[in-house]
Image 1 (cartoon, rainbow, N blue to C red):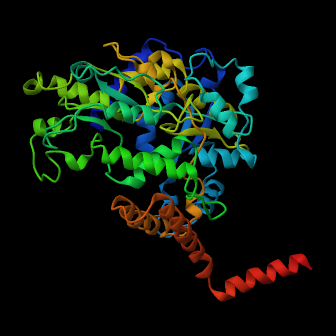
Image 2 (spheres, rainbow, N blue to C red):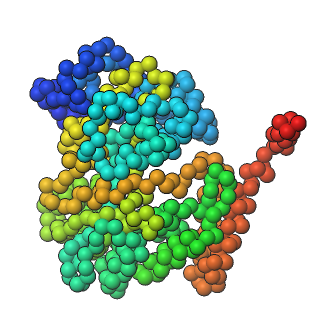
Image 3 (cartoon, rainbow, N blue to C red):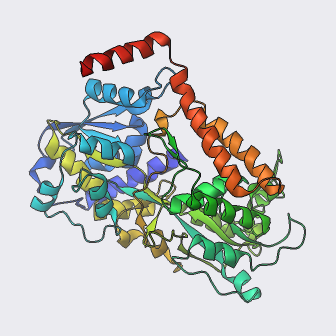
Length: 477
């Protein structure tokens, strides 16, 4: 697959260069002929040139690109990723940094990223046509300024089967439904019949776990079950009580579909046709499913398979993912795949900006839209379209939420997540069996979770703790 995509991209490069196609500026731009170098942080060299570097190198032939892989930061020896990241940047000195949202925010606050506002204004960077909310999000995360740009984004939406809604005389879903509205709509479909053959209302996750569903619901309301930075449990609240109750009701309604219900679940061998038909949405047995843009490829591939032509869902469309009550214009199921930023003390800021401008340009988006979209959608809305007329605007109608429910999770004790998840299962089992009420379960989980968080401090060597106490005492003297 990679070989074919590289061939296609190579042909695109030749065609663009032959026609004098311009990316992000005038072809007479002096930076294109100026001898310079650019050091880019990415997964590995091959992936970088496949994703961005081939066309950029063709358009900027005098720019010597060096890719420094960030994979060396991730190893069993490196448990403190903040330290590993800082060491990597100090040693490799990349001009372009590849960041997640949390690290983008942190480095922005520390003044380690180049402020892009001035250069964007000076060069009249085209902001019209970017997905709504992108620059606002980057400014919010950057403390009021833009310090990076993203070439693509990831977004989940509700795919729905129009024929099923018509058959059961249920009104079609609409964009910006709340989670409660979405679940209630799903519950209107029949729940009888063999579970491997019947119709289902909604698939909202892959795992049949109450905690996973509750987290999805709670995150839409911008609440987390633990404040990792302060090592404080926050699960015994009305918000979490509502999230768990809603998740419990949804599971007990039998309206939800999970992978374990597949007729092919656990099958060691199956034909490609069986694999496709095991997906209840593809085979017409699921009213709604929450998926990303890559799912459109699966639908189209299944539809093109000769023996399945009349068995695959045909009359479908999409609306936005469900929203939280507190932020009806935002989605926690939307994010940026990668944020590219320029190191504040980079000696190659001009060519680094050319790269950022290129990967967020109208022309780059046009090229990306012709390739597969498994890596997300381009940030230029003009090229987020579907020839069959499906509502692709749903992918970017909502703004990305700045809330990060997993912020500072790397600071939690190593075994915390596993141990706490087990505790949730134990307490919620009692709730399901009516031997314990939900409020009592959350109270117990609050205490158990806090005890788990305290283990890390209690496990520290006495001399380390004594050393810290001694240092603290000397500072107060």
